[in-house]
View (cartoon, rainbow, N blue to C red):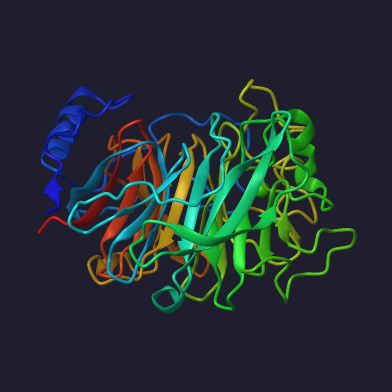
Length: 410
Ligand SMILES: [Ca+2]
């Protein structure tokens, strides 16, 4: 049976006042908590101004919803992605290169055989996983990973396979996408996978972080720093935008490192990308649009210097829907439409690794109207999903990471 995480380690609290800290520790040990205060730290780029009201630091939501969290599985080594199967169990990836099945009874399978080799240095390894909408019939799975390409180079790749009936092996494995060019970097791979309502597969990438490939986020002849939309068996998806000189898989470009992506209830893709210091951003990427990196951005380089010319806006380049300064270090994302938290319907939930929290943004007419954070101190939240029954599932990124189930405390 799932058990309450009453023995979870004491959270590390960086800036909270002692009284608040003691309250948080109490809430944490009890496995419960409500929305918590944040944004007490000053912005990193105080001279930058948002382009519109509530583009950053939207009002903090008053929310007394009390949360309960239960560990379904612990002892996962840097889990990265998860996908629910029809029986309520979860496929979970571990960054060193393993995929396992976590049962609702708390069991964890041996690593599933048949997956290709990954380059698991630093940010690389086995990354996201999704299952086909008709998985119950086809047992088809897709996953993304850092693929070794020789000479220390690597690139984000997507593979697909058929999960055996006993979930022990992946068969008919085929690599259906390889990001080009490969690069000698161990940073900024993206890569979330989202099946859209037309059966196409969105793949988000990163720009590999180093000064030279960073510029390729603006180069549509490459796959670096892009949202891609591919056919689930390989090749560009039908209906992609026509981009002069562009790779046919490209949906949008000018992105830095997208580790959060989800479909909104209306079927539109939303993403959150890691920005520079003070520039994590939420976007609703539209076909054929340029989202600016590294020509425009909020925030500063991690060296403290401006990015490029220090611009936050330019004609023809899209503004983010929202940005965070200080950053949350986002990973994982899901829109909430479930039954267990009816007041949260229409909100988007985002994992905060740096923020060590579950972030909720309230949305209205495509804009953010408020922000709340929960479970602060729970650990680096690497992925967020909504289970079929409306529970919220999170993965914590750690040597001893966990799959947690979040439900109302009442
Ligand atoms: Ca941008």
